[in-house]
Image (tube, rainbow, N blue to C red; front, top):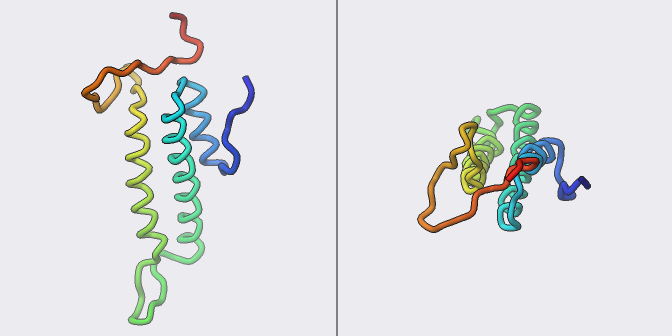
Length: 114
C-alpha cells in the first residue's frame, strides 16, 4: 500500500497517523480530524523541547513567571484529547465511546474479513 502520510508531519505526527490509518479505514472528515491531531502532537513536542531548553520558569518584568509554552502546551493537550475523542476509535474490546444520536457506519478494520 502506498504511503499516504500527509506532508509536513514530523516524527510524532507520522507515528500517530500510521498507528491509526494502519488499523482503520477513515472517511475524509475523519482523516481531517486525525491530521489536526497529528499536527497538534507535533506542536506539543516542539513546546516540550522549548520548555526543556528554556525552563518552566522564565524571568519576567515583575519577576519569575511560568513559561508561555507551558500554558500553550496545556491548551494543546486539551485540543488533542478532544480531536482523538472526536474520532471515536474503538477500544480494545471493539466498543466505541461517545455514542452519537444518529446512525453511523462502523470503521472497517484493515485486513478484516467480512
